[in-house]
Image (cartoon, rainbow, N blue to C red; front, side, top):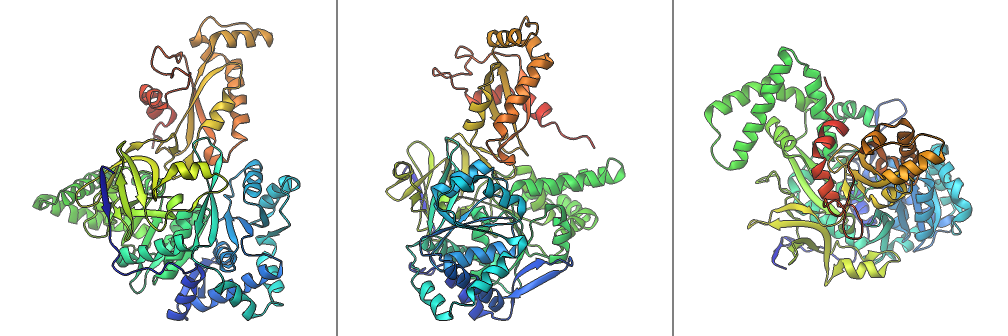
Length: 604
């Protein structure tokens, strides 16, 4: 490694604990305090104490034992974020079985692939729509035995089955679960676009959870801490956060409806927020649009400039100019305090992860009074590996390693991570495991640098993955290849890095286009410019895009495309010698098209 930095552990972390012990310890520490809160059918917040939630998990675990779930068996969950998801997750892992999360947006084909790769024996679906996905492929899933629907009473059913199992039987199973046992297989898209299962142990999760509490004590380990979690629990970051709430002193609020998220902020009153950058962008845009274009709009614009200037001055480490301090104080009363009320009025920090955070957005919220502490991690590291501290944070970096985590930069500039949270490997892919984890160092595929204080800055991405503003990792190869099966398409290049959705730039093959038009009884076109405008050609491209989109979830699909009149060739630098599109060259060349047409800012 040409650079290396390790954050030492302040207190040692036991290596042979299982995940259930985090919940059990919390129930012993704060038995009657609210642990998990959720919005009930009456629209009001309801609560489980730590003891009640632990007992709920034990009841479900006993039901799973009664239904024949053995150590090492895989159980899938396809549902939105909810207390039921959390309870099932911990119950499954508590008896040595493996939780296999599936995004509710996954296609039936993806469900089939994941179920078969991990040998899923039981599945919990949120509702009839999710069950229908499973039913559509169940005949092709040889190991699948039982499917339960949460909306149709799955929790109560499993608990009823569990009444025939004694507490002793549960505790025997729980105590047999060791730190080295697998806890979950989490699927994420690889460079080929095919989901890869990442094997994570109990020890992986316990280590990074306790490290997180020790590293972020201001956020997680003081009285009255509250987190509103609305990210999908199929994402490993959200699952880590539910566990870190158990291990700290945090009350965990669960919500999955982004349409009500602002109302949930106001009523739940979180002390910190975890979100992907897109959420903060939406809040910023909503505040800007609400201000309008009149006097209020001008005030908001000046307040924004002041917040950003104040933040940059604060980050410089130099004294903030007196005039700027005065302007900041004025706008704090007029504007900033109102924005902070959007989050419920008690929020102190926000942690941003899952995608790169725009520096302007970070400076704006920092200036308003809400530091956005950017972090970094991967599914392979149980989510977080580094995060900005609450004191001395540096905007533009992804922070410093959590306690017990080492980061390094290889001779090729690739960011590498070593810790007890690094995964066992890639399920059924020993060759990928051998390639990605070398001498304990996980090679992330991202390029980065480390400063003298241990702060890590990302400088680029080695692997060909698009990360949207919502934090979705999208491997474009499968969809692009499908679109290019159209007789008129020469190249399809998906874009959307740090953008709200996936789009595509599509080039045409003139000779093949004319041949296809003739076969369809239509007139040929004289050049590519005319081809781009031809409604018959466009309809064919749209058909190809729609067909390709059926292969993936909505978040991974092409939502918008532009047909360009340029030819991509090796001579103009847009293709490699093997005729693969050079994504960075093409996105740089079409930057204006991407920014001002595909993702044109909405007019207020």
